[in-house]
Amino acid sequence: MEITLLYSLLAALSIGLVSLIGVTILSFNINVIKSLVYFLVAFAAGALLGDIFFHLFPELVEGGFDMTTSLGILGGIISMFILEKII
Image (cartoon, rainbow, N blue to C red):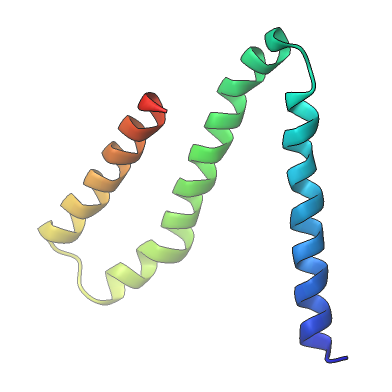
């Protein structure tokens, strides 16, 4: 078995095991879920912003940074905020 395939399978398995945290949280009572939702949404928003600013943003700057890029980033952040509030 190739080492790349082994690493891919281990990564998929670890992601699957981490998703069991969500199932565990859903098994708690409703008061615990309501108290954890704000922290989980904040974590998700931080993960998305971290991904943008550490991975995608430097590639945008390499291609040239202008007003269109700035408005696209701002529009994306605002639309994600609105989408999170609706959901």
